[in-house]
Image (cartoon, rainbow, N blue to C red; front, top):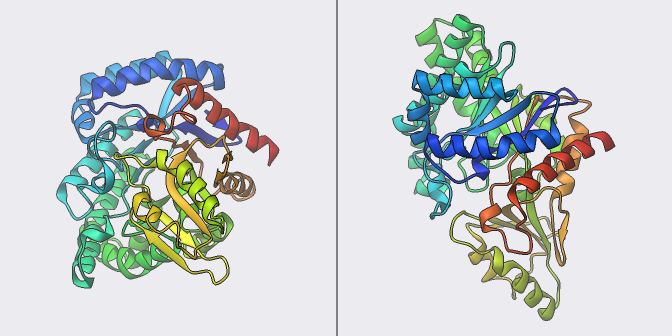
Length: 405
């Protein structure tokens, strides 16, 4: 739906199902009711998550026509895809495998190009479209500096090949599409400084040579092509976990000519650690229900006195240090409902979302907004609410905070 000049939706990765038939059934079950509540008279945009399996089915022209007819009949449209999870994303162990296959592989390239073809077929005329994707790879898969640099090199050449396709789509069809890299904790790109370094050291120099050779562009044209078509998906939760402030991030990217393609509206868990043992035992009791086996819940701990940060690959590793740590605050990568600011003794990074919504009304860094709370099935019972009503509540909360900003 349109809100203050932005396309606002939620990501359908909320719904379990890997095949196109399962995905389409979820869309038909949930979207009409959600639309009635938040966008009854106006078109409703859909943030579509397609697994590799679903993309192989939907690329079929007949299935695409059926879906396009449904979109038209229900006054809906698709403007953004979540192309980060390639395979299974619900009711199984995902953890670091969410990055697999990563951008060093041809499988990731083929999947992404297929998503672009599908998005190109679905995108309404005159609208830009985007696909969010993995931050290249999971950093701990690469054992030393040589392996990490090799992963950067391979990933960059593959991203350049996608930029080549995006350039050709724009030239031949007049459509503007972009691929949006989504930094997250323990990804190869996880914060602002790493994103800027990647553009300077890898994407622009290596990607430009690729585009100059394959498209005959000048060095300046190649750099502009890369920065137009390869953008950043700003996931509010992810940047909050690493203690970065929205305004500073947006200004840093702008200064480097790095563009935002999509903002994913999401909240992380935030814990101010008590100094006494009993208080910490209470925090442990509250956090234990958030320990679950599906997703990675990276933790970044901070000592507010000296600014020191310590990272943990998952919540159980952080909990092992809880009773002795000198750190004063934890941020936990757990996408909790955006409309809740606290959970008793612990809270969320909801205020970062409010800061983002306020900032983009004076500096519209992008026009794609997507609520992404995908953890409903693994949330503790005290937090897990009815899915359809929760999605409506999240979208309405974002709308109300736009009004209030």
